Image (cartoon, rainbow over all chains, first blue to last red; front, side, top):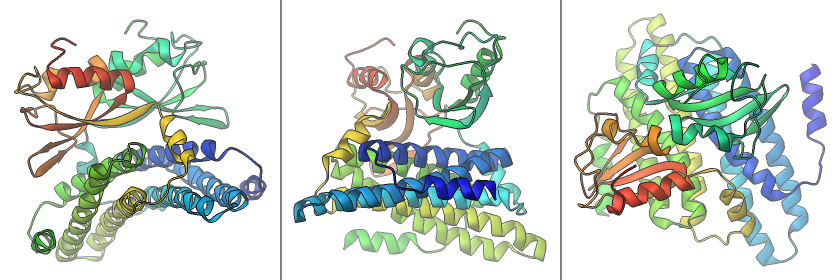
Length: 204
Length: 204
């Protein structure tokens, strides 16, 4: 119930830049697809719940975009251009709904045919979540300095810090200990990242 | 019309491993999301048409999975487990349909509000397509040897060779000249990859 109240509060209209709304919708939709497949691969309910939470966030973003769009249209030409914005937002939301359907396989405790795992394990890239320990060299480092992409081929697709989540953090983002990094990469790259996050590995 | 005939031919039922069908559906759905956003960012109709083609392929894969699933169920337990397979396939197809909606913004020549470009340009990672020239060191090299992920942080998400397309190529995949690499990475990484593909850059 507490969660439901929180959601209805979030749905109140607040003016915010359409650009920021669109960036967030794009980032979340991509992240959700990654997370949804991962939740199944790892039979991980926590990741599946993250997907559900993001689905709620997407509903909210789509609602805000619709309101903002309606208020912005002043001429037929405006309305035409804004129509593309609405289609963009609606397609991103559809992606998120489909990702929700995927992770529901895990949340609903469906019996899962082993062929699904066989299929997912075939993937070259995977997603993992690691907490940055106080001993990790990453703590207080910017993503730019960490150079995880070019050095070990892993991408930080989102960072959870307490209750908030930052999608596609920029290069200037400063990692703190306690952050949970959601990373995409090869098995080898992610193994190295795990060592870096725990502090076992200090060079990369 | 020629294309339509080809599609209906593809739709004929052919026995194939469900695992292979699922792997392809997952890979295509992820690729389509990437490609759809890119088609808008670069106002690129060719990429948008790739998305449409992949949407047709997804329809076909979903059809095949349904047929195979129905033929495979022998008991209630079978049917339960196979139900998850159908949900997986259907969610992947929904993702692909939504990606199709996105790229339709480009295919239908909709008037696009500049805020959409501003939003997409903010992304850290992007997608590019490069043709491998005969002069490129990549020609005849396996992806494993190329080490593009760990060395320059770019991922080959698909390779087009003539009429066919290989999604998520494995490490053993041998690149040939004339191949079109569809790669995801940072602007810097992709700049380097472009140099490697054209043959201007011989070390990385």
